[in-house]
Image 1 (tube, rainbow, N blue to C red):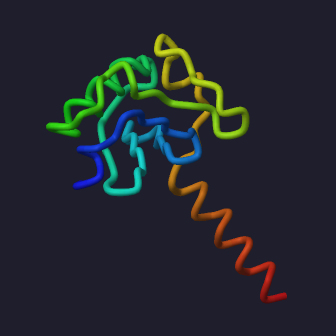
Image 2 (image 1 turned 30 degrees about the vertical axis):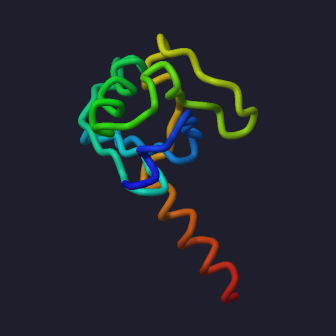
Length: 107
């Protein structure tokens, strides 16, 4: 967590964010740590980013410098967007895809 003290901006790509609709668990994978929270699908991005900022503790980064960006276009996503609109992949789905890729390579 030493490098988070010197961060000036934090852009989180959507491919580092996973959401399980059944358990309502959101996980954001960053270089240093993973942020995990329980959010309903109607939660706005601003609430999630507020909680993430609080969890960072003492850093030089300001709340306004944290944003979620689209993985493909690198365009920041509006903070008024609801979680259900992001169409995030769950960890289970990503594990299934990795498993299929490994099996395809063996054949």
